[in-house]
Length: 63
Image (cartoon, rainbow, N blue to C red; front, side, top):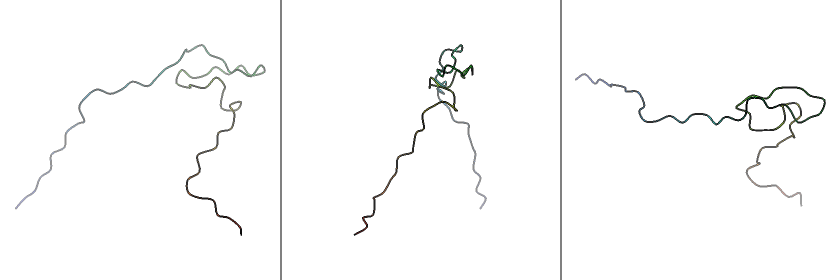
């Protein structure tokens, strides 16, 4: 008995990536970096505020 699998391409609509204005510049006054149209932040990577990931789990108490 021979088993054959046939693949097909995913169908349906694909969503386009969200874009922003192409002529944006970093908000830091000393930086002239032109931001990507796909970057939703107002600052470049160097001047963007630090964001820490969400910590999952529980904190252990030292008692």
